[in-house]
Length: 325
Image 1 (cartoon, rainbow, N blue to C red):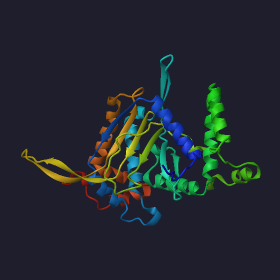
Image 2: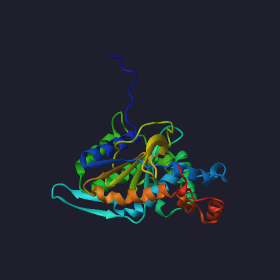
Image 3: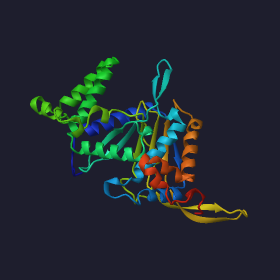
Image 4: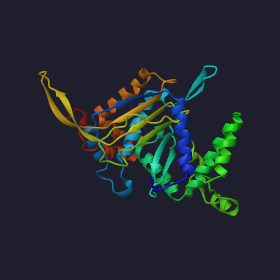
């Protein structure tokens, strides 16, 4: 059998492999496919951009992130971290007020980096747009190996403080010896890189783990017709969301006289995965109910823009929640 290619793990593939292995070894996943009708929501979203141009436009991904944040406010326990000791069957769940979204992002060079979108629960759509634009700029102008090495080093030190000496020793050997050695900066090159203003490169705050993960494959391939069925929950997070692409789907519509007909509607598949040690299905229901409210009455998104744009967003617009599909 002829070998076509051999590529040894770089630091990005090492980190993904380590985290996902830990996830599937330790986390009892529960997965639910939520498929809301977003026909009117998508129309309302398009109205947001009618007076915007270029970088001022709000992406659909950003609006969906905002909707998920609103859902998490209704179900705050989903925005938590878990600590569990299997040996003694003890644990705790720490719920956070701030919603920090870990968002896997494909950069222009094809590399994938998980960025921390901090405090998105308290940002309006314009603030979220500017934040994403700025962090992507920093990512595109950063030494990604160096940035990820800093995160890996921090995690290694945390593991050492927890007393896992053998695990740390193995990670150190894997990072510094053999064909999978990590080639990070040293000496003057490292000092020069660290001298770059933080506004021009990624920092630890941009890469440290958030409170919840949102993966949007719909934004990377809009023509797809599949759905997320399951995705990784990154410990110690207790929930993750996989957002697909908006798809035309046949659905039944019931009339007042009791008759039904098949209509084509726009559906947004969202996979909700949660850690069964921390959550039961019932604790995710408030999230779904809040999302249903948003999708059924999407005029609410007019209030999600910057205050100076709210009047413009509302001017001359009818209430789309009452429209017939």
